[in-house]
Image 1 (cartoon, rainbow, N blue to C red):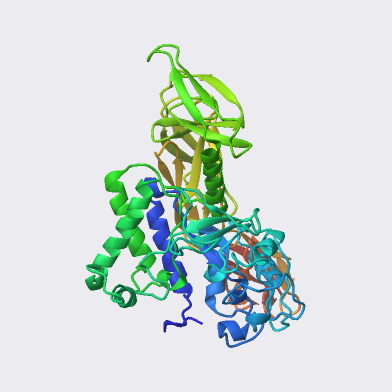
Image 2: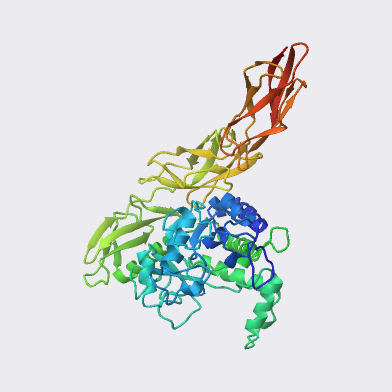
Length: 585
């Protein structure tokens, strides 16, 4: 299943580990603390379906990629890409009782959408009829079933499929901006505006940009070969002679241009682009974004935020409503005196309501970014409102983040974080965005500093770890992101008890209970056992199950000629505890 031979390619667990390490490194930059990749998910890869995954045993996904995805899933946004990725959704029926994921031409929309939702986070419904498939929920925590990437951007111009998608809870899909002249697909009709599907108006399409990091490339040699093929048929100077470094420079410069324009369209990558091609942590995706962000920060020093597909879609819907409102505004009054701004939406507006963004206007609930306030004014068709242009208070930024304590035991202890602003929070409060670069420590998505206050606190929760782990916590407000480090330590042995503590040798046994200071990490905690005397014997080790804090074991005894005291010891993570057992004649 971990083939590195194109065109059949599937990343392996090492690629996933490398991707997580790279994203953690990126997020250590305060400006990029809220950068987070969205990965597409096909649930059949977790089921052991031998026809689709090439796994040696039916019924179970016995490769290590699925386990690695479960371990690392909190690091990413996840988006449905259908259950088994049929070549096309065109022509599929709403439901098909005879469907089988081994024969995609028989698949149904319900099987593709609902079963994938079920595997992802337990929503939807398991409709896989193949009894050899072990269909289980893998509990992706950052997965919203309203979002979907259809295979090959298909189904959107089918007369029935869009309505079927809506019936299965899908609200947002992507298009391909390079497709021209095709209904329900292609580029934005206007900047930062998506497409309303003509067959299902409740289905909103977010244009997604392809680029010259190609879907069938796992390294730069692959990409350069595909680049040459495209730009030499027909010949398109100077691109037809580009080397790999020139291709990377070309693609990353295009990305930066989109960022600086405020373009909301997401960029498109594919699974081979995530491959750690040199064993040193480099992939086509990581190389592209490393160079992109390096260029971006030469021009701009404001934070980057990664939105989910539904958040992008909602932003585009709001922008479209604003465009259709044809709102106008005027400012009256002399500069520095009692100015007012008058905003009008005509009675002939094509939308009943719209949110009108006004940069530089301070009001309750105003958004703060880049040293400016942006008010979002909800208005109706035919409405005119007049607002005072009040003096703009100095906009604070996040100035510091402190943790207490700075070292905790994973899974059993928390830390209290205090985020402080450079000045009092505005009238609506200051919503500070929070993030952690390691799943060992979790934080809320945001915390609000109340109006007039300069600081607030929040709790950093922790998860069990097998080794001491440093997590960096970020607090971002107005483009400034102070950070603080939290050391999450594995549990240690807190106690060892024996019951009873006195037994007759060769006749009786004792039960030992070893307890940790916190829950055992994934895979369990293997505690090494020993005895100081042959009169009492113990197993070489006992494993405390993941999430548990204790386990028991049996101390066997031998016949003794004189009463003997045996010291039983339990060791884990460089700590040990002992207890004495009296073995009687």
